[in-house]
Length: 192
Image (cartoon, rainbow, N blue to C red; front, top):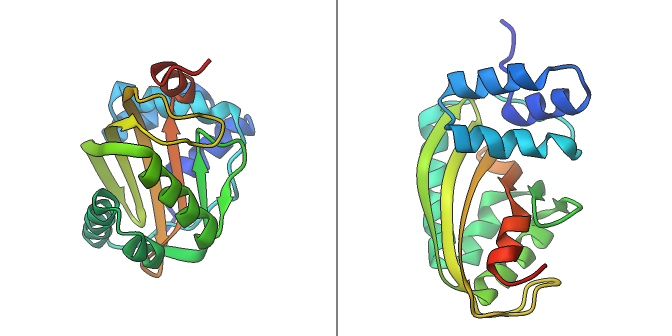
């Protein structure tokens, strides 16, 4: 049986010009991703992502693990988040030009974010699990009360829409991609 293609793999195929963007849009729409989510993912096809990751575990288990991850995130529980990432995990974040590689780098970024944002909330608007891949559409809100890299604190509120793709192996996150319009976030925070 042929293995299912993950969203990051499809994004990589578009980047390599082996899959038309139109086909990516059709596939994402058929998976149940909203128009806003499709737009966020398609917009990122201009940048390079890391190599493919295998897919194939029970979707219900992955949804529960994602619920646990969101709970730890909302509570600022860096210990639980630390345990949720594989040692070699890779996180692609639209705010950073290079991937965060390794658990320590990922937790350092999350800790910085917890310290810089007051009242942070993530509202899940759509979520799909296929194999070991969970795709989540979300709206994040908060107030930037502390400094972020290259972004001094402004005290301004933000509302950001995006999509996150999480891939796990052996119960641990090995790859996470956060797709959102970083330029919009910068504008809302009063930068550029």
